[in-house]
Image (cartoon, rainbow, N blue to C red; front, side):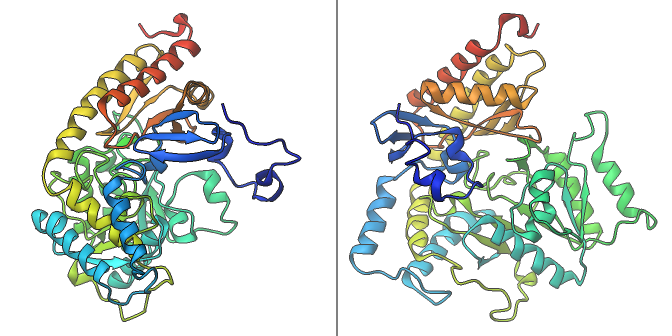
Length: 428
């Protein structure tokens, strides 16, 4: 196994900030990537069940996207254009309209933001406050929406919030579905609090919600709860913003996590796998009546990314022109659920969480989850944790991973659990 150099010669230790994180869990130097396989500098191969934290839903270096990007570069195609018109932007928008928006009857405009998910969230809440003339935004327990101050105010994690170093105002955090136990109807609680003029909660500009909470522990909202939140938002005169940055682009089974739920958000934030190739690209989908910006009222030097337009267009045409990928996701989701049930059955109190190809096992505590991930890495599988206490072992394999390799990765995960969990801890 490849190892990083000693502290005396390690450029990362010597020069890179202490804030680095993933490299501490995977202390090798990676050199190549293809599909669902990462290869280190010594030639050791690893199955990738992290996929750039769902930024690589279509795997590493998809050959068709790579070919299109190389062609664009070789003919001196535009690299940076601010928000000016380019053939590549027009082609992406045409493909997005044809394959994603029109089939769903969505008339949303596409607002290009800065290159990451937190930029999209910042733009969305800023616009919601402008549209409604209100300041307060409703977010939910265990939600994660980004690390810049506006998005951080929506985020529940105490450690991440503390890093802001300032107060994070104008957000009310309300309980997500089942966050207070299955016996508590959080929808009824939310409705009661917001309808009470003495609850102390200011009228909201928007509700911001992930339908599967990626960093919060793979909590998945039911269709009934999502429809209830949409109804309450409407009754409150607030906008519904769905954060699909991690749960979108096929991760939960279809392009959007809200597909087939009977709701149409006022705004949708997208990033991560939007480019299809792991390139920085984020946007906000906005219903036309809410698109009230003045020119340049919100902007950013890297809004849009011409290289990402090139690869994103290929991704849309290759994977969303028919139901082939959706059917593959459904089959792999079934395999994943069955295998995770087997793994969870070995650990007392463990349970599976999530939806589609965004699933994991809550093993009860962060120490065990971390040990499982470390043992997986030792065996050649890259996988990480999530949740308030890092207690969930989270599977984010590329959606396009070959079934044989997918099963091999799940074998490694199961073997790691068998190695670490004594038979005495097995569930009844």
